[in-house]
Amino acid sequence: MRWRSWCSGSTPPTSPISPPPWSRCRPVCPSPWHRWWTGRSAFSAAPCPSSGAAARTTGHWAAGSRQADRAAANQVRALLRAGRTARVELGGDADTCPEKLTLLVHTQAAPPRMLIFGAIDFAAALSQAGRFLGYHVTVCDARPVFATTQRFPHADEVVVDWPHRYLEATEVDARTAICVLTHDAKFDIPLLRLALGLPVGYIGAMGSRRTHEHRLARLREAGVPDEHLALLHSPIGLDLGAHTPEETAISITAELIARVNNGTGLPLSRVPGPIHGSVPVAGMSPSSVLAA
Image 1: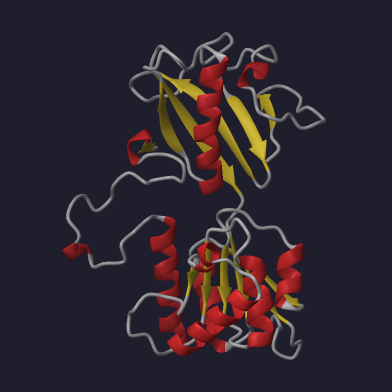
Image 2: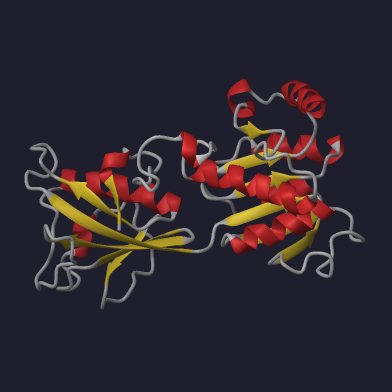
């Protein structure tokens, strides 16, 4: 991961800075706000007083040490990957930041991607549901007669290409959802073999339990390790008793939401504790991320 950084009011550097030492921002300008860009995401971080409001002071801000800078950067990377805005608590540790510090991390991320492979009726319903959830939706199929914008008006992109070839060439990240609806081994196997080795957030494949077992056997023969196969959600979706394309789309997106937010997928009436708790972010404990 390569980073660019600059303070508000300054001119962005022409070359990336890697790794991101926040201290390099300090001489650039007197603003307490610090902005970072990486890939498709960006964040701004500023010191906050105990009340939680953003500090409006002048002068240069420093977390206190290079160790504190690294600790802050590590936690902010996790928020960037998740595309979330949150307050991050630092400090109280003599080895990093002796004084407690609250960072407001405001993430401005491009919409997460939903890649739907297979231009079928279920894909049309799923593309509509995905766009409603804020995803940038791409439908891909190798058959031009099926992969048309007329059939998928809610998709942001409709691509005619072999699924594995398109996936190999396109950009994905930790928030990308891959939904394989092709239900055809000549498409499924090369596509899933590639997808299961990528750092994406969700991979689901349509098919019966029998199809799933056959698919797993083929993927093992293709050299996919069991730890990668464990990432595959198949049969795709939650058990909602869905039958129609629209119901199936809700089943799939419900599983996706639960996966992204570490939800149980159970009825709220059967889950103890607060309904809206703090949101865990990969690489961070729930107690370290407070809803902004």
